[in-house]
Structure formats: structure tokens, C-alpha cells
Amino acid sequence: MSSDRFSKKEIILSYITILRLVNGLVAGVAAAFGIVLSLPSGVEINYLNLILVVIATIFVSSQAMIFNDIADREEDAINAPHRPIPSGKISVKTAKIYGIIFVVLSLLTALSIDLINTELYGLSVVTLIIFGGSLDLYNFKLKRMGFWGNLTIGFNVVALFAYGSIHTYILHPAAGLAWVPICVGICAGSGNVGREVIKGLPDIEGDREASVRTIAVKFGPKVTAVIGSLFLWGLIAGALISSILPMYVVTTTPLYLTSQIIVYLIAAVATFLAIAILFNQKPKWAYITKEILLFVFLAFLLVFIIDKIVRLALGG
Image (cartoon, rainbow, N blue to C red; front, side, top):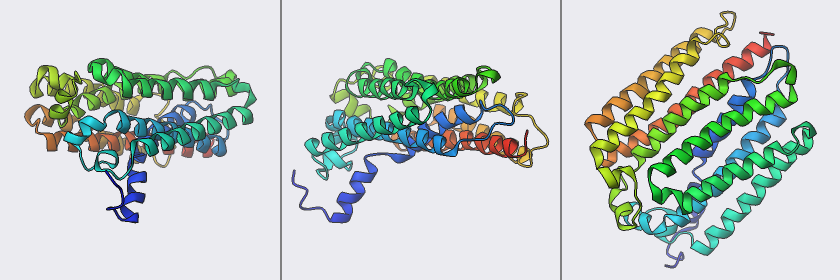
């Protein structure tokens, strides 16, 4: 299919939308969450280091999204024909080159983090290879195995939080390894598994044609909604527990009350979505649910990062 029939604006937008940058931003903030919330009192935040971590994560997420669209082009021709590859705005060959560019960019950024912080001994590069490699394995193999693919996404979410905690521990070993961000990561990973399960609802037709064995294809909408909802409760529990853990309860923080209110609002939204999907499994609502959840994750992470930065600035 020729791309000549599309305007330059449409082509440029397709190169941006295929990256699904919000997903990459959420992943980058997850890694930053682990780093910032593991920092002991009195330690200044290395903002350059933090920015590089977020950029590297966005790059590796972007390449995964490109290869995801390459792997899913047959299903997308049915489920989402407007996407860049099935619509013809980007060819498969061009998409592969585009993906490889982001692989290189992600590796170079991760390498720069490890060169700036030689004590890490390649932790960033190794984590990026594991993260990116498992995502591409998901794209071309594990996704077709249904629930095992969903669990892979959850594992990668936990790995991002763990990287942040280990990163801080190596640079500041006296404070010990912070387990709370990892525990929060497990809750976030559970929520992401729920989101992945629910994502299968709008794509049943195309996935069935392509022999992708998602829970939605195998068991139908109602069972899918129940399983997705159960995993979302892990995220809700993480939000509520995080709001009362001792490491967060510092009443001298000007943003403390605001943070608590936002966290409870996030938990309320997630609770609503976890319950609503049980009553409405229509493709449009499932799509809306998975999009809202992405911003719920981002808000959940940002509120604690900002609160921690303020506390560190105040010496708390």
C-alpha cells in the first residue's frame, strides 16, 4: 500500500503515534520512582542521572511499541486498521529500521548512565537488555500465549521499580536496599497484568483470526472482566498501603495532605474501573478503561515522586 496518498502531517504523526510515548513515560517514571523513593535523607537528587534513566526507558519502550505493531500488523488490520502500519502510512521495512534506531539510542543512553556512574558496573545496560528483550519476546512469541504474555508485562513493571531501588542502593549502600518501592512495584505490576487482560476485550475478533490465545479469546468477555478486575485490586491495595507506610508519612511535608487526597482519588478511580468492567465488557468501554488506567499509573507514581523531592529539599 503506497504512502503517497497521505499528507506529510499524517506521515509525521504516524511516526510519533507508533511510539506510544505515554507508555514509555509511565515506564520511565516507574524507574525514577524506584530511584527517588529509595534515596536516604540528606542525599541530593542527581537530576541528570534521573533524566537519563527516564529517556533510556522511553527509548526502549518506543522500540518495543514499534516491533509490537510490526508483530501485530495482521490483527491490527482487523482490530485497528487506522494504525500506522496496517493503514500504509509506515511500511514494515521502514518500521524495522525505525525500531532498530531506538534500540541503538536506548543502549547508548543506558551506557552513558553506567559510564557516569561507574559503580553501577553496567547495571543500566543489563537491565535495559533484559527489559527490551523480554518486551520483544512478548511481541513476537509470548503475546500469542495469552496470560503468560500478560504476566511478562507485569514482570517488566516490577523490574523497573527494582532497578530503581538497586540503582540507589549501589550508589548509596549505607542506607540499605529499599524494599518499599519494590513492594509498590509488585502492586503496580498486578495492576498492569489486569490492564493487559482487559486490553484483550476490544481485540477478540482480530486475535481469534490470528490464533492469539488471549484470555478474552479463550474464555470470553465475562471471565476476562473478572480476572482483569482481580488483578486491578492489586494496584488499588498498593495505592492505599503506600499512602500509610511510615516512609511516606511525614507531616512536615507541605504536599503531604495533597498527596494523600490524590492517592485516595486514584484508588477511587481504579476501584470504579475494577467494578465497572464487571458490568460492561463492550470493546469501547474496555478501550477507555485501559487508557484511563495508563494515566492512573502515571499519576500514582508522580504524586509520590514529587512528595519525596519536596521532603528531600526540606531535609526530611
